[in-house]
Length: 176
Length: 423
Image (tube, rainbow over all chains, first blue to last red; front, side):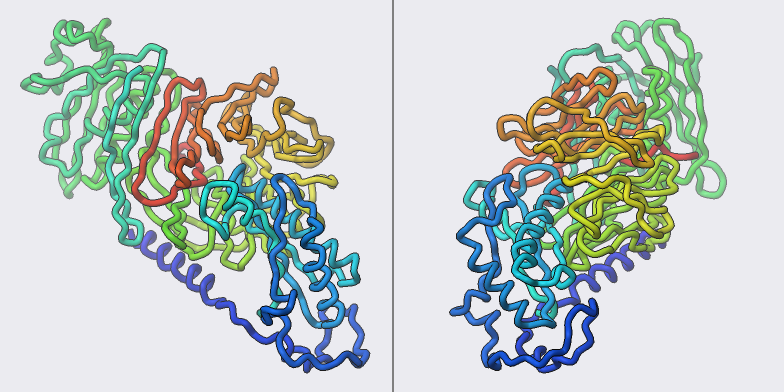
C-alpha cells in the first residue's frame, strides 16, 4: 500500500512537471535584440542586420499572415496544398530574416486508425511543412518536427467536419 | 447464444474516482463444461467470497457453464460428504468444494477440492494459508488451477492488465487485475499517455509520455514508482516493445529521418537503427522466441505488416489483403499475429496465421484498436471505440467468446495484458 501511495505521489510530481510549462505569448521580436547570442548549431554568422526594425510582433498580429499557423491536409495525405503555400512561405521568410528563431512543427491526425501509425503520419505531415521551409533557405537544424498523432484533436467531434480540422500541422516558435 | 452479466467489482481507488466495471459476455457455438462451484464452508464470515470469484472467473471465459447449487445443505467439505449421484442429476461434470478456517496470527486456511463428477474422482486439492486481504487473489489462483485441470491450458486469472483512462483533460495509466478489479493509477498527467508495454517479468511498464510537449519513451518501475526516460531524442520517441528476455526495447524514433525502428538497451544507452528505409516503419513487436520483429511499414504505398530479423536485416511482407493492416502483436506461441485491419472504412481486429498467411477478422466494431494477447493466447483484449468513447473489449482467439468491459471511468483505451505471475 505504501509503495502504491509513493507511485501516486511520483505520478503527481511528473504531472506537475508536465503542466508547469505554461505557454506565453512572449514577443519574439524582443529576442532579436540579442543578435550576438551564440548559435547552437554554429551555422549562423553575426553579420549585422540591415532589415528595418520590427515594431509590432508579427507572429501575433491578426492582420499578419504569420499569425496563421495551421496547415490542413487531405485524408491519407501529407501533401501541402496550394492554399497553404503562402502561409508556409511567409514563415520561411520570417525564419530566414530572424536568424535566432527556432520552430517546432507539430503534426496531427484524425482519430481513425492505430495510435502509433497515426503518430508517424503526423510526423510526416510536419516534415512536409518543414521541407517547404528548408527549400526556401531555413537551416534544417532550426526546425524540430514532432507529432501528437491523434492524441490532441482540435475538434472533438467524430465526423468529417471534425476530422478535417484534426489533419493538421501547426507551426510554433520556441519560446512562444 | 448465451448472455451472462457479471457485475465484477469496482474498487477504482484511482485518485478518488469510483467506477463500476461490468463485464458483458457473449458466446456463440462451442461446448461449455458444466461446473458446480459450491459456496466454501466458512466463507460467509470472511470479507470476500472465494467461491463467487472462482465462479465468475470461470464463467467469464465462456468455456464453462455454472451449474445451479441452490439448496445444498450442509455444504460438503470432504470427499466422503459429496453426493455424486445428485451432482450427476444436476448435469455437473466438475464440482468444486472448499472451506475457510481461521488460523493463528489473523490468517486463514483456504482448502479446495476439484472433482470429476462422472468418475467420482478428485482432480486437484490445494490449501493456502493467507491473510483475509489476500482472499480475492487466492480465489484467482484456485480458478487458475481449475481452468488448467479442465482445459489443459494455463489460466490467466492471476494476471494484470494496464490501460489508459482519459477523463476530460486528465490521463491516467491504470493497472488492474485481469477481471478489472483493484484498479490503481500508477501515473497521472495532463498530457496524453499512449502505448503501455509490460516488461516480460511484469515489474516495469514502458509507455509514451507527452509531458515534454512531444512523445518521449519512459520506463516506470511499478513497485518503486520510479520513472526513467529511455528515449527523448530530437523528434518523436514512441512505440516501445520489450525483447522477450527483457534486455532491450525496440522503439520508433524520428531523430535521423521519418519514423524508423531502433533498439535500445533496457538500462538506457545509445539506440541502434535496425533498418534504413524511405518509408514509415513503426509499431515493432518481438516474436516470443526473440528471433523476429514484426512491424508496420508503408514502404509499399499502404501500411502493411512486415517482419525482419530482430538484429536487423531484410524484411518480408506478411499482409496482402486490403490497404491498411497495422499494429501487430505476436501470440504467445508465435504462430499468430493479431493486428488492426481497415475494410470499407471500419477498423477491426484480425489475426494472421504466420505459416499460412490466412487472415481471420475477429471483431465487428467500427474503430477497434490496440489488440493485446492474454499470456495463454486464448483471449485478445482490445480498445473498442463507439460514440467517440473508448471501452475495453475482449474476444477469444477463435472468435467465439466476446466480452465488453464496460466502465464508467471515462474514455478507456490502449490496453496491454501483463505476463503470467512468476511465482
